[in-house]
Length: 334
Image (tube, rainbow, N blue to C red; front, side, top):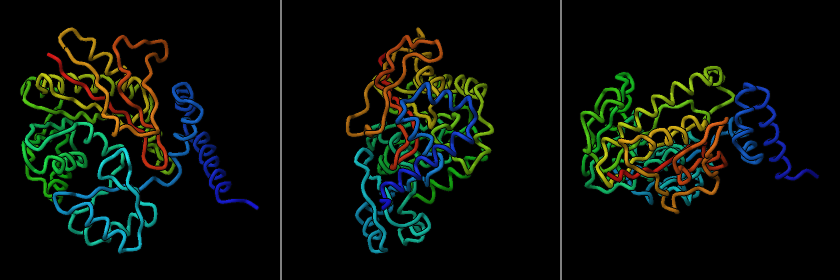
């Protein structure tokens, strides 16, 4: 007799096989060098299995209790994600059913990946702080930060794309975020105009998106290249330098991407932190914010070595609760 567990494992293996058939050989080779056998399998399977559905209450509209009561009354089920405050995993029900709830119609509920929510929590904001979201569009994290700040203090949301800012403004308005000033311009230039203006800065950098590949969306896979990774890494370095100039001494910068590529993660951190005119260090995330499915940062990759200590950053491996992600908390020293 075949058990449910055996069926589930067979399905998991099928997705790995499909991923190995569809992904470019170079991606597979890089993943096998970077990840353990277990993490390699989890990553590849995550590109095909249904994405986990996680949501948070928009506490500018409703309490978590009100949202969860509505979910339960609609015969859906959810469970909290222990490492991500206010984040719940839908265990019975569908996205469409969530979106049909009364609390969703008044924007009291927001569907978002747990790892994405974690970046905002890593900032450790307080209500009266001055906070900058350097690459803000489309606005999921910006609206989350506004809620964590209780619509107090000052939150500046910047993005270089005027087109994407329309979506950002729409989300902020619908979510009831009123403490936000929106800017449009290259984030890498804000270090010149807003030096030491902020207590916290989020750099959710444009990236190659390897942690969010989907087999049913081959266009993203077709766009992937090591040339794109190198180009993005240069921009990411400039954005992180600007962020460290924008934050005050003693303040925190959170650098995050949704990619596995060390060139866009550890080696961006390494290049920036080794610059003589930047005095900063990577600090550990609070323990309660660290997911169980993580791997330690790499300190060597394809013949290159990190000269700075990047070991306090975390790489999140896709699992049943979330997608792949990378997060580092950086404190400006002087």
